[in-house]
Length: 136
Image (cartoon, rainbow, N blue to C red; front, side, top):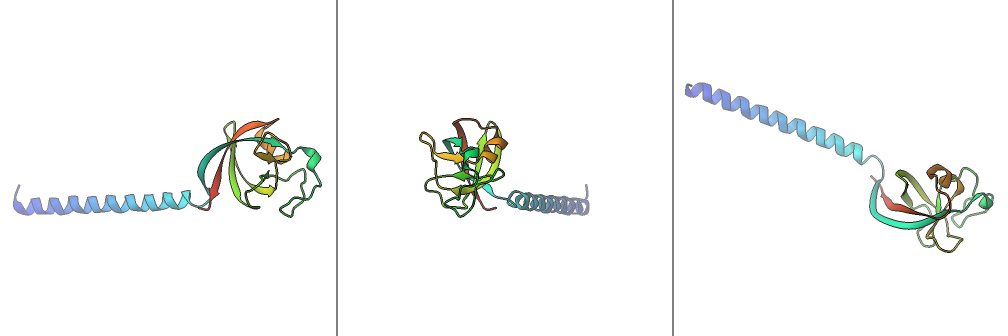
């Protein structure tokens, strides 16, 4: 090949590499934007949890609410009211928040509201996995 053709080829290959890098950066930035649009799990913990049951309906919570049949949340003795957590049970992960102090029964670290227990399929006292929901 002549020197002129080699220079043109090198410029074309450099331009192609630059274009590939730009596309890669754009895709990475878009993917990061999608991942951070919602809360992200932070930490991984195991605890025992059980439902507070329908007997808690109508009770005022330590966080200023009233428990009803559709209230989804958890009770914990020290986590601040409103802290959002991911709870995972049998492969289902739900984003929820602390709505009360508790648990009110010994042998567990969390009470889950009746509505959240139904959604997760949690009956009795079971081992759950949980993590903090870090804002995205």
